[in-house]
Amino acid sequence: MAKAMLNLQVQPYRMLKKADAAAYCGLPAARFELQCPVSAVAYPSGSRLWDVRDLDSWLDSLKTGAADSDDAILDRLG
Image 1 (tube, rainbow, N blue to C red):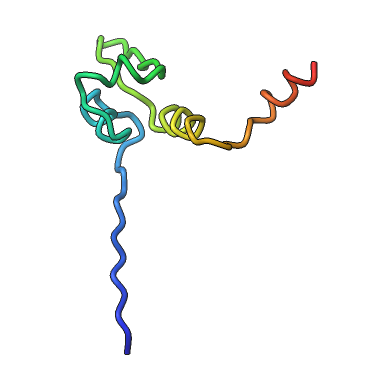
Image 2: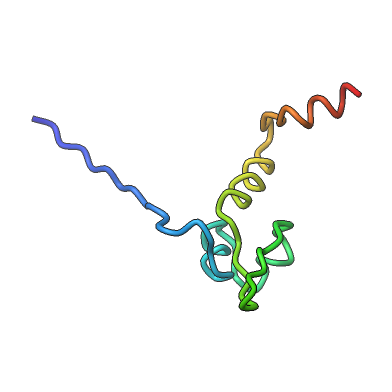
């Protein structure tokens, strides 16, 4: 019987600290805010966290041939 190995990485949090957000995007923490246009969410306590969903959208937009969102298509149509 054949065996298969499955390697999954599960992100347990939606909101990430800067170092975690940088690692999630594959960027060094020192250059993360310079290269990533995604704004952090400012909490009332003063902490700043990045939303995984926003990071995913930005990363998807970097792919060549990435599909445009419905809004982007409608904007181009006028």
